[in-house]
Image (cartoon, rainbow, N blue to C red):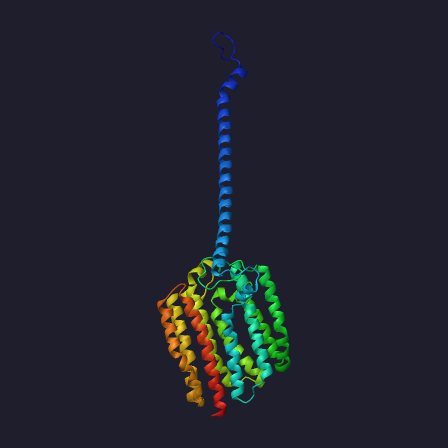
Length: 369
């Protein structure tokens, strides 16, 4: 065994600390550095989450502030707030088909004022319930924010809470039930099916596991329920059947009602992309939306011509008094974008009402001449 300088054996216990101490100190320094880095990363993550939370809160606050400013001083929870949530301008979509369906019944000699009024009240209330559902679900899905280009929404503006509007939705459906019962007594189970389908579809338009409006089915929904179902259902509760004239008269009403939605979707396509709302305007672009609008108007004005030529119902050509307005609206949609399309949207809703009024007069006049 080797010996030390002075002939003694080396002290192993003294050598081991000298050889291992630097390594131990290095390991401790490494662990401290790793711990410091971990703590720094944790603080950075917490800071990012805090900033993200502040961003969400500030975005929501900005959305409500912008909405409140646009609401023109409407107090939260007030009657005017509820009126805003009802969206009176959209009620023309409920009035027009009932008017035309009643005109069909009158033209065929079977108009009944009681069922007609119940159909009108029920349609109006279901439209309001649908508006309430849209207000809540669009807000929760992020479609209604401070970047919204359309009219102010009650929940988005902080004028009503989501819970309040949900309660309003249930109350509105309850108010519609007596009219539904009356119509069911007159028309039987088909009317019950129509009523239930209308309510569920109105909620499913923006709510539920597969919202129709978010998957490009909004146009089909509007054409079917605000055209075919509403006109033919109104005629059915008065006549007891759905004549071919009712089906024909339903087509232009549904077409123009769908055109109202098309303007809305063309205007909102950028914000709809962010919210994941895949409308036809989002899927196929602005130009396709303008083309769809033009085709819907063409169908609406082709039907009276077909009725005049095929059945001699020349008075239905009264609707062509609205044709210049329709052409102007198409030109606006084709050349304008963003917030200015609000005027085009309102103009198309007014076109629907004017068209329905003249179409109804034309249908009713045929009974006497």
